[in-house]
Length: 221
Length: 211
Image (cartoon, rainbow over all chains, first blue to last red; front, top):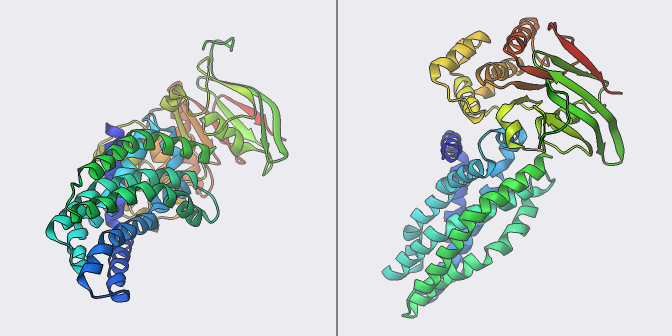
């Protein structure tokens, strides 16, 4: 789809030219993950127990941090109007934007996860399952977040409202994502958890761009 | 859906009304725009010019009334209308991070026109911005940003132009350039709806005054 490619290429180009914003979000993720071992305990078994949950919660917060920017800048400078009036389908343009959001915020979080999980004395198996779960789960965060970001467009205090709106929706992803690692540490298979995450990803992939596009149109009216 | 609109009219509005909050902006507005014709929308500040233009572009829903494009009744974001409309509102749709030429190429592609860098360069040359082509949009003046908007209109080949206060921030050369582009557009069987306080000289036009 040329529309998806157009939006993806444009958003990536703009993100790469404003690297500071990307850096801030990643640094936030790293710092939050690092704070917990400092604040709690150096005991390895305890750290390994809380580690996956902490990484997931930090990933949710980091993803939330950048969500309000997903449509706000395009809304403010009028690009969103032009997108809605383009001959290309708006859901395709929205998909491209969400894909760019995941590539610039979700993917770095996934890539950093093996490194950061070293602070929590996670076993090798648990670490890889955690990374795999994040790889499947973070795109869902961007997709669901896209709906929230579109719904709160143009509202005063939209950022806070966005958090209240989106965080409850993130709960199932958090449960299955962190649960997959717990299963492996308990000697069970992580398969069911990862399958459910994958199913969630498919549903979000199909539905979220249409929902977000509808919300964008309402915001423009 | 075929309707009983006038046969040769490109764009028609019938009994249009807009309500914002409790205030009635306008009511019972009707007009028709034929090929090669410009409709100038005039009226004091707050009379609903922008609201009317956004309705015609398909960005917002009329409270009451019908809009027909090429004889078909169109709803907001109608695919037929999106194929044919070039809308230039108050917001320039420029990205501060991208250069003038990148902005132009990106916007033209969004409008459905795949242009090469050479074509974009020619269009920038026409609006006297070729020297600023590699500058990021953030350092351009308001008038220069407007000129990129003019270059976009010239690049994308759309039969309906909807321009909201196109002369804002333009110098006299810029206004002359706008008039030239508009005349060429009309010569090519296009039509335009322009909200303006400053009359532009085009051969065939009609006036719609909002109270």
